[in-house]
Picture 1 (cartoon, rainbow, N blue to C red):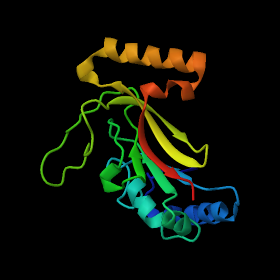
Picture 2 (picture 1 turned 135 degrees about the horizontal axis):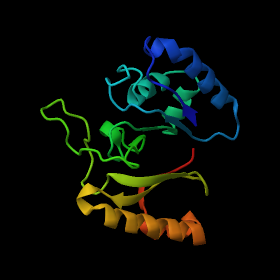
Picture 3 (picture 1 turned 90 degrees about the horizontal axis):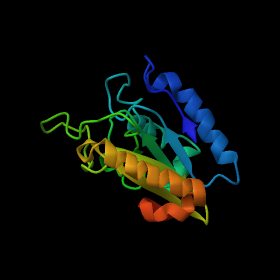
Picture 4 (picture 1 turned 90 degrees about the vertical axis):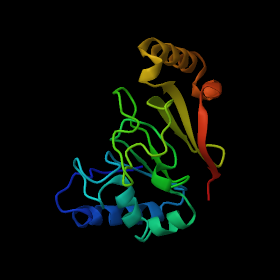
Length: 190
């Protein structure tokens, strides 16, 4: 896991050295099969530059030694937040980019309009609250998503789904509750 703060004034150049160090370190580890990059902003503005949003930084990272090799095997992934709706395949990064930002604050599914609107592209009206799990066991990379609902469902329904999930996980462990989850992505670890 590589976490970073994209809210830097100098753009990617200001944090590039840290990414170079992290990518180099990951490449030297024999047991690292996949790397997840995590940050807050999924789009430019509101705190991040285009190249320090999570997708923008990923695009830069995938050219760096160490990360370049992981990306060639489709093992460099990213997850972002900011816009309060959850989507897989964020902005067309199929099997690579995920947004899991709907964790407790209402978010608009389509808060912008026009051809350039990207706010919740790929979202559905059933994905405003949910819990992700990244699983790298059994020689696989899996991204599970436990959907809890959206504001149209009302607080009572969301809380019912949340209680059902937490009771299941508390008593059985999350693996025994996968009937409550959706598998957003799965692939063999390279």
